[in-house]
Length: 633
Image (cartoon, rainbow, N blue to C red):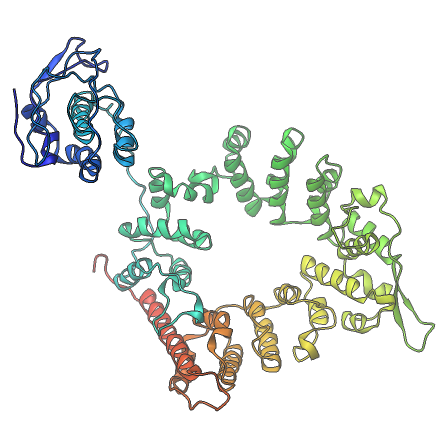
């Protein structure tokens, strides 16, 4: 039987009487005739179009050579070969046999590469290779449809858990949709245009929504999870806002599995501390992530119970697990933890020993802190023989086994001398309260002001900086920071911006902001970016005024705003929205000086316009989150 066709693509559907061998376990073993009309009626349009379209590209762009005759080892296949423009005459059934035994992957490969480069495995006598390929695809398509097995009945997923938190106000819900839709991810003040960067405002919006205790609208959960997947800094706030339904969705979509890893215990409910049997069972039988989450939760509520739980299985834990478990003791660290940590000093893992020593050095009354204080005091003293007192330093000449047991690393990093490396570790682990008595009853500020002989000042002060950060000692931090107006933007002890930022983090938020404001007023914005990053949001009024004034000075200097893109981006996120009114005078394009960069005034006006627009948008966001509206309004 012959069929006719006026278009090449019709060849995949204009078939009849195709004897085919059973190719799977759920079809009969004898040859079966499948009328094409019935096969096409039974198949969906979507499933039939894809193979035909995928293969037809080869036929449209290739005019391959005519394949030679082949012999068939299977039942003969009758094809309906329609006439096409310039093509060969129809081939009667049985005039040339083709087994069409190539796999579907082989057919697709031949279509993608072209029949000139990858001729079909089989061909019919006197027919072009692209035509043969299409006919083979047509037969394979029917076979694939006929061989489909019904899927097993899957168990219906359980219902998503309820979220008992209050419904987000409608205006705030619309705002969230807008923030999630904007995925441009601009780069602060380096962006062009005056429109706010909505994606950069999303973390602040999430923090405010979590502070109000709202539940995420269900329809926003997929976009919220996608945003958190792309930005790890969003994950804690995004998952807290998304709530239990996000974990339910994450179990159904592999792209969102990060939510299960980020949630305590992989999203599983942790037993109550009062349920001793359940706690023991989870600790003994749970997965590693569940055990870490359990230990962290217990440490936050009942530190002693968490420590006892860890001590019971400590000897049988893997080294990498012991390190993670030990790190959880930072929460609620107290003198009661000292016996366990002293035991960990003898651990066979160097990383475990170092972590235990670090934790013990944060306890000023610990035995390790006393041993380190004795070693450091032998190295540092006051020399009163000169005209004025000075600090003398005699660094250790060796790292003995006792020092190594207490966490001192014997081998220095590349470029560091051994003695200075050992000295720094001893001073860093020594309680800061040791030094006033050791150095003549002086205050931290007086000690830091003393000269140090033989070029040891940088090493000694840097170690004191690390000790102040580790022990969270605000008095020593103030002494090492010095006055913000100190020359060369440096204090007496802080030798880098990173160290100054860490020291600032030990101060109260208000004091921190005042110090950075004074620093900016004296030194400008060129070195202020790291310092601004540790200030509380929104910035205090003095700090905000200092930043705006410094930006105004930079504008008047005639440079481009791109040099201050980082600070401008921080200002958009951290400046108090109430400061927007003060910026109205900076929106106009200023008169350019003769030595100014061409067009700089216009770029500054654009940057300030974006800053003002962002501040007003943040004010609107805060108003929307504070409003109350009936559900569904």
